[in-house]
Length: 391
Image (cartoon, rainbow, N blue to C red; front, side):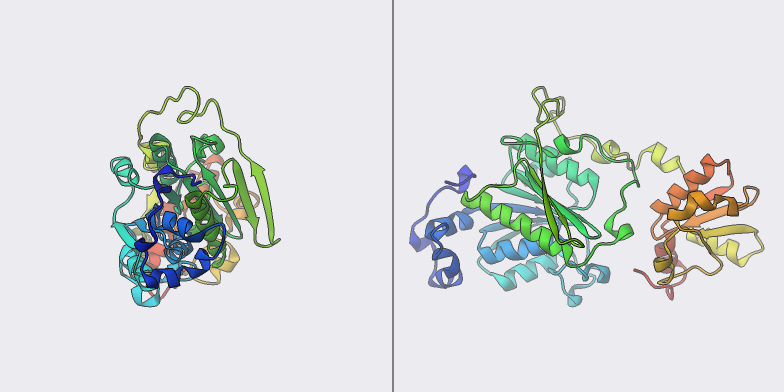
């Protein structure tokens, strides 16, 4: 019995070509799958939000398994920095929209799969319309506003949300399905403050890690379609690559959850960037910024100021801005005394969030002439000095 009523319909064997029967033969001879299970896969509709590290293995394996319709939401383009972990995309696809790269890879693997592209950012205005036609939604995103958006849309539509996340050497996965267990808000009622949790672009990720977590998401998706086994509903699977250790935590539905609890206060989708504190006036005005162009003028002129690099030494070894003093954020509390509050101070990191934290630490210590470099050393490389490597 399928967990998903819509894909419980059984089609005659004539619904498969000889090529498909040959292709899916290793499924068909499994007594837990058989022709009937393959028919459920063929009838299933799965939406993948994101074609990055998690979406790459997910989409490849769902396509190989014969899921009939794959919807894909992504608005990004392929960058060379993606290729360390996003195996769906190839070097020849650099600069191409990820949607096009994904379609190319899926059709090359299994031309029997229908791919429905949504080359757009998932937003409150379009999420319900996009998600409503799918049986399972798989969240492969890497930011909190979209995670809350996917969760809330799935709760409102009664859809299962197969969730995964990765960071450095650790990953986690579960299935949020409000009709049968907790949702994402039951686990994380409130988002972290902006910049408190570094992204993979800031903190890094082991390239092979998303392959494992994405495959866990693919397995859970297939289990939901086939009605097999025990899905990760109410269970959070944690993986530590360094210790090669899996752990599991039980999740409970929160009766007071604002969207799936006994008296939900959220009846429609909200502004998720505002909910997560992104783009609000407080967040924007919290730390004064300086552009890379203005920094270049100061470095070329006679302006006296201190340029502080708060990245870790292993990052400084990759790329530097000449004249910067290195005080890693991890040591900043202990080394604030090395800076003169009477002088102007400009701080930078890779993209900006870590140096913004350092700016706040200086403000708390009584400094006032402090600015954060907008876009960090990444912007410096893109707009000022292309000889500085990007990473």
